[in-house]
Amino acid sequence: MVRDNAYGDLSIDFADAQSVRLLNRALLQSWYGVQGWTIPPDYLCPPIPGRADYVHEMADLLAQDFRERLPVGPEVTGLDVGVGANLVYPLVAVGEFDWTMIGSETDPVALNNAAAILTANPAMAARIQLREQGDTSQVFAGVVRDDEYLDFTLCNPPFHATLADAAAGSQRKWQNLGREREQGSAPTLNFGGQAAELCCEGGEVGFISRMIRESLALRGRCLWFTSLVSRHTNLPLLREVLLEVGVVESQELIMTQGQKQSRVLAWTWLKPKVRRDWAAARWHKRL
Image 1 (cartoon, rainbow, N blue to C red):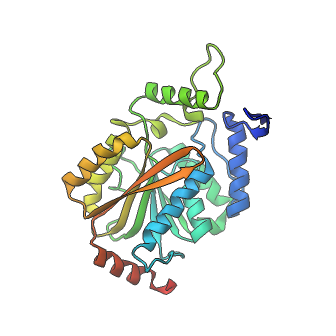
Image 2: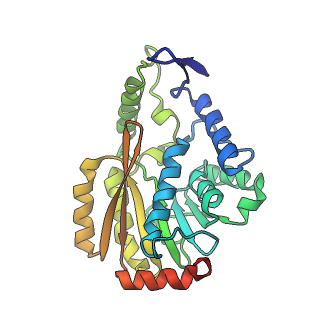
């Protein structure tokens, strides 16, 4: 749907879920060659530019340990924690850098939809594996295999602690778009999104804290762990967790899209020389 915006120009109605889905499909096809992209009704429909920025931030982060060169090719392996029905992060990572990607997910409906997208894109299916996380209390256990090494993880965690918090956040988005919901209408959660995509015990601080603590078990088998952090006010709490567990290094990466600013928290258990040796050994074919 196209409508007049506040400046009197025609613009896509970003408060309309179907409009955003169609825009996403067009962007993924145009920029990354993805065919037949779709998601079930009421599932999270993320903005493609912001997701692409995160993937590019991962490339820049890896380049720090790789003579400032962007590593490309299937030797680079990443894990998307909570891949969702949309599969956007792996699609962009493969389409842009030809990386190998793993996507974990607890929701069978989301996994089935992601699998259908891969069926429509067999070349990308050769680079992307989907794995079901059967234990919702775990992040990495049961997903990362004992003999497996990862170059990075990324995650768009559930931001809210309750559905009421999610509904309040959606109302703020409506207001920021200069729109009001019809009187008496039910709140639209995040313009799409299942409860597990939006909420978890402890909100994003609780989820990322669990991820940080679990990452200790993979300290020798993953180069960088990362996650989006929606609220900058949550960073001090997460810094305390990083200090508590004793990670070797952490970074806060800032992304800006228009008036919106996003941030990625990254941490590693490996010292700089070990990281450089890791990159040289795993990605040497691309030097």
